[in-house]
Each structure stands twice: as structure tokens, then as C-alpha cells.
Length: 330
Image 1 (cartoon, rainbow, N blue to C red):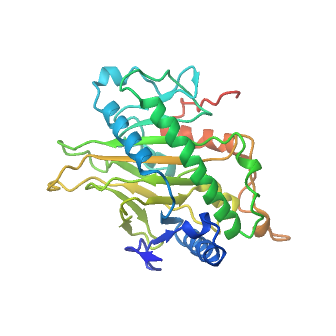
Image 2 (cartoon, helix red, strand yellow):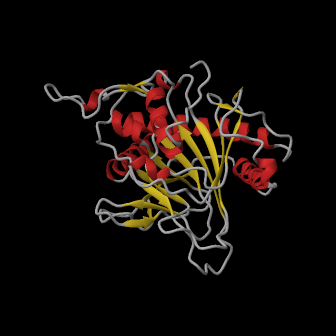
Image 3 (cartoon, rainbow, N blue to C red):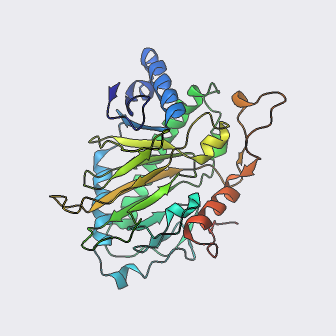
């Protein structure tokens, strides 16, 4: 296992080659499981290599999404934050979110713009321009769901559960893709305003493709410090979210993270683009304490709640109490 610079005093963020698990090589599978378990118990962040994800798909969605963000604002704004189409596209304009509000912080708007898509969410019709946008996103979603299925298997093994334990909970899953554009900053941000405010993800796991540009992802260490998450070419940053932390009764950690502003004089282009795949269970899946963490006579830390209810709560926190997370069939 390679090691990059650590986000806390307990050791570096692990860079884990998961190829032995995916290839079914029994001597290496256990080592992958152990390393993933250690990372999830420590900070909930690690970087994976050896995943086999097609590089061409990552390049394709990156390029066509960049072409969308480069369109005139009035053209982009024809796509709204929700819409009438199941599996449609969602657009969140620049400064349209305040992720720090999910942690009770002041609602300072984030310096980013985003596109979202998930088969289980409502959006607007896909635009004709740029050409190939919808096809690239669908292809990326399908392949990323396959990778997430492999990670679910690693998680089940790391938790001491049967290999198919999570499968029923992800039938009709509410996973989604988000591509985020962090533009150059020709003007000084407001006090406390950064590219993405401190937050934790509310799903089960996130698989993130990062950009090697100034002003990037940081995690908050257990002693309160902020530290950079390394960019590994061809790798994916994986972190667990609050839903998984609830399932494990806080034994696995969903860590706060943020995206910071570039230096005032970065010395090179500071525009940044990230591709996040949020892997979430079905709407009716109950987030209750998993069997390995139940203790007789000791109540779980969290009351049971369905994922749909929980996701709706967290959505309102980041977008405003007047906003509703629209889910087909709900």
C-alpha cells in the first residue's frame, strides 16, 4: 500500500490497490479488505487504484461537461434545479448552494456551479448542446455503478457480513452523478466564502474524480486541522458518508471535508472540475444499526430512518427549507 500525506496524526491517507479483490485473487483479497476497514475506521477517506475503470469514459464526461459550463449563462439557466422528467438533468447555478449550512454554519454561498443527474431524481429535459452530454453521463453512471458494486462487496467483507448483504438495499438505488465547476476567481471572495463549505456527504459512499488544479479538497482531522487530500493520476478518492456511519453506529467515520480557494497568485490556471458519484440505497431502505454493532441492553446512537426521509432532510439544509428533493413515485 502506497501512502500519501496524512489528514491527521494517525498516519497517511491510504492509496489502496483494489485489483486483487476485483480479480478474485484470494491471497490479496484479505489485504484489500483489511486496508479498507482501517481507513473507514480512521478517517473514512482513501484513494483507490487498480479499479479498472475505463479512462476514456472519465475523459469523455469531463470534456462534455466542461463544454456545458462554458455555454452562456442564459442558455445554462434553462436547466433548473428540478423539473418534470424522471432521470432529467439538474443545474445549480454559481453560488446556488451553501454546503456549510448542513453543519449549522452560516449559509455562505459556495463558489461553484454544478450539474446533477440520477435515474431516481426529477430534472429538466437533456439539452441538445453540447452534443453527446446525455450519452456520456449515462455511460459513466453505468460503469461507476459497477465499480460501486465491487466496493459494496469489500465493505460487506470488512464489516463481517455475508457478501450479498447490501444487495437488496440497493435495488432501485438513489445514486447520482454530480460534475462541479470551480471557476477562476478574478475577484476576492467574501470573508469565509470558499469553493465548497465544510460538510459531510449524507449517502453511503462517494467515488470522486479530482482535478490537479490549485485550490482543492481538504479533510478535517480528528484534532481539528485541515489537510489536503492527494491527487493521484488515474485514481479515485473514496469516502464514506453519514448513512454508512449511521449503519455502523459511528464505528466507521464520515469526515468533514471542503474545497478551498486557490492562492491569490496560483501561478497556473486555477479553474477546477470534479466528478462525484454518490452511491445511495433505495428510498425505503432503513438506516438502522447493522448486526455487528448491536449490543444487548445498549440502544443505538441513532433512531431508524428511511434513506428517502434522511436525504430530503439533508437536501433542505443545503438548498433552503423551501426546497424539496423530488423523487419519482414519491
